[in-house]
Length: 219
Image 1 (cartoon, helix red, strand yellow):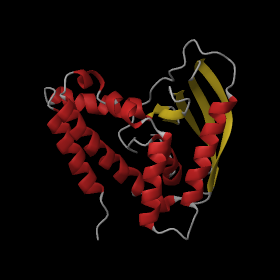
Image 2: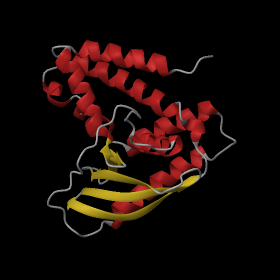
Image 3: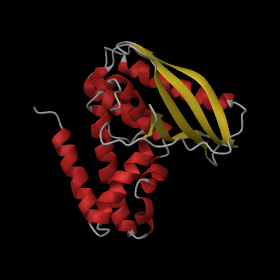
């Protein structure tokens, strides 16, 4: 069983934007034919964005609503939202209409928001440090980090895959926590749901809405 402290998971979820804490299956690292060089710019990107998230988590002057607003802005800054949204649908992305994809995109974003927003108060003083990086190809880099301190008894290895876009900005497209690639796992879950629903995207949309409602804190 994979065990990750809630605050460490909140950090990774906030940076990648999308990935639930449950129903994960071990995935092999997608690291074939990697170059051995490090990429200092990619490392700096991950460290900078992690520090932004940690600053928000540790700011006791911010209300929960203010933290939610800040986190949503960080997700748009850090994660390649359109790429991830299309990726998690796997083979079904090509078969759904533009209108259905827009509906799914809105629902998926709301679902993702609810996942990390429910963890904003779980931060207990953890910090993140970059330990290295490997260039898959120019503009496609794996950055390795560790989450330490707080209530973490042992360092938690977190690996980031970041891509440089046509605008020369880095963005995260997946995160591996203790051997699990979160976006890859999310795709497996969604494709399985769509397989069972004969490709009906509205079944998946309804499921996400239900999970988001179930995860909402009681008032």
